[in-house]
Length: 191
Image (cartoon, rainbow, N blue to C red; front, side, top):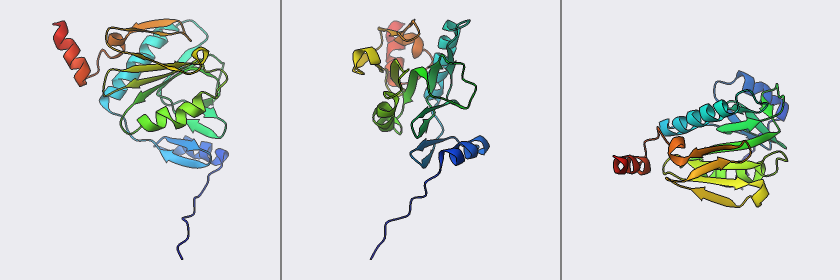
């Protein structure tokens, strides 16, 4: 008779201690640890652009952006959002009070970002907006707490307002360095 494989659960304390020593980032979901894969160039271009533009906008204000090295804690889960804005005076390796979370979607992360993370993030009392930005096509989806987390989509030619921080950007500005079919077609039409 076959037996079910044993799942080794890790305590939060052990996860946090191990993560400080690890060269690879891991997300933690209810005792299970998941290694994070490297990101595509378009993913990095999008997150760098967003951190720069949000950081410039928040210069001199209490809120600050974080790139993918800051964890967010929700209950017994720890995730590394691609971009996050937090307005607390946090001095730890994670926050529990982000105002804005942005995830860059890829084929390998799309399902998790739109299901597991969506369910977890919308439980954060301070979170006002959850933004999903696709790296493979030009599409931005924003879910806002004050709109009952219903998605609103934005495309080339649209302006996107991150209401939680009062910043408006054009979709083209967000995707300015991204090299995907949608952007290449858009640039060819512009010239």
